[in-house]
Image (tube, helix red, strand yellow):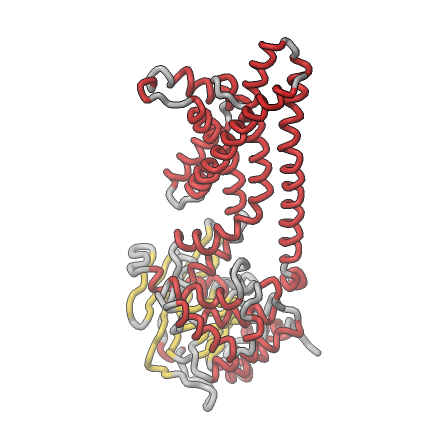
Length: 273
Length: 226
């Protein structure tokens, strides 16, 4: 339960993590869909500025876990804290806070991008700042153009998503999340739906965000990326965390044989050139 | 056949067109309301909407018209409601019930993940529906809407039974005056045809355009990996 030592600073030089400032915490989190138990008691802490990769076989509950973080999925049992504040205590005190206000503090990037197909790239980015944060059209637009410039996609600002490549779509989706100035960004297998040649551009952007100190939780099968970018690795299987710890140690000297097996299995997923 | 028939029927056709356009206009509004209610988060709203739609769908439009005119007419006689507007009301209810199913299918076809993307940005359900979900459902609903418009146009002939002077009613009168049913009704069929044929062509085009649009939109990347 909530072991403080699970929150550790990442490898020196790559991390802006402050182990003392816990951003998000879940305790004994459980989720069942009917009779199917997807999460079976997960304890997890995330420090501000920390980059955590969540890996594990399909169906291990990774996606469900991060969807519980922004309450796209409501936990069946357990507690969720954000900046030390109780967000909910299931099943007795479900979501005690304003859900919408909470969700907009947490960005999310989806496997299938989920850009809004009827809007241009620019409008995809400005919609929420304008409608949710109340920014003026000009303000939202200026911000969005800055983001587009940063990701090198100003030339597609007025294109609709169906005109964009998968890699471009995912970068726009990341910009859409960034436009809300989130305190944390959740990535749900952001490169799994991409053609192999487009994985790199998305991972490079994510690595850049990581360098800038963005707090990120990334569900991924890209172990190479995890190794480079993540402060901490969480290995999941069958709705439980098998092991978590600083990335380098997890790869080089995992405490459990099972961790080693899963990482080996996951490594065979990745693209080889 | 005399040239005056053409003129008489043309006057009737104008009523038919007016009746159809009002009906289509109101149907879109009523159907949209039913469609939104039928995907409501609140069970009571959802069930009520679906019950009313099912009820209306199972009543012949002719019966709705007769009910409005002869059933209610007696009680609302003092309001002096023009049969034209009774016909608009009855036709609207009858057509909107079907149209709402087209709209509902359009809304339900938008993947749940689009709702999630909206929620993750902080949108409440109603604004997600208005800004993100409904706009995407418009295009796929267009072929169905064009079809329903054709049905509405033809069903408007039913208003002849409550003495709305639309083109079928006018034709009936012409027959009773001239005793030439074959010629009059053939001419009447021609009038309907002249309006509907271009509209059917339009429906075909709309359908093709929508299919092409969505065909192009299929996400190649997601097919490649999954």
